[in-house]
Image 1 (cartoon, rainbow, N blue to C red):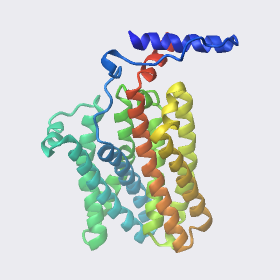
Image 2: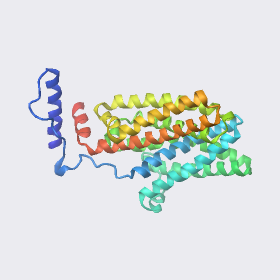
Image 3: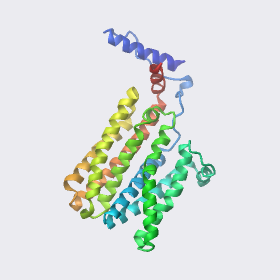
Image 4: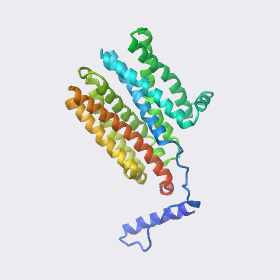
Length: 316
């Protein structure tokens, strides 16, 4: 096959470089029969599914931070986060349904409860978490049914981490090299990115006097995201090129800059309203760029046959 021949060419080129020899032929081009990729690239819409990844993370982590804010008496921040989580999960579900094509396809997934299927479990997770986050927001805004609101807040917070990270498991469960190869690190990357988004929302929408937990969360999220990103690239080897080049590379570099700047601003200037709002928006934008960058890296790795062929050949 042409893909296998290309893989042999790259291996031979590496051996020649080790011996100090010059290649006599141009570097092999990777292709499959009829110019098609070795695996089928994701057919998901970038706007819908990458947006679904981001909004789900914001919702899930926001519910956890909302519960913590409520427990510590930061009620205005808790209310803002509850409302944002309810809105985010609603938009996330809408993006998923839009990509599926019609609402019936989502409800059909609820006919089966399959623990081994990330899509099945994710559908059930959204169907339970959505009403809980909505009830938590409604009771916080209206001030009615406080006990029901407390229970809903606790339930949403318990499910929040799974909502924030299950999309990483969903992506890693595919054959896409940039996602599957980082199956261990991707949930941690998504969790850190989601925490940064939730902290950003708390800084942007909550009063500065209640921002201490959000500022701490922003700093921890920035450090964790950097560590997870580096660990993923180390594990991916040559496939990590898709995270550094092209559209994905631009998005992920922008994400790192925004997240680190937002975290620094939150820690140093987060007690002041304008700086807190600007830092929060930077963290939100950085989290969105991370999700869209990871999505773009996955598409790029599926479209180029070398990212499928060469890693498999090097394992044998």
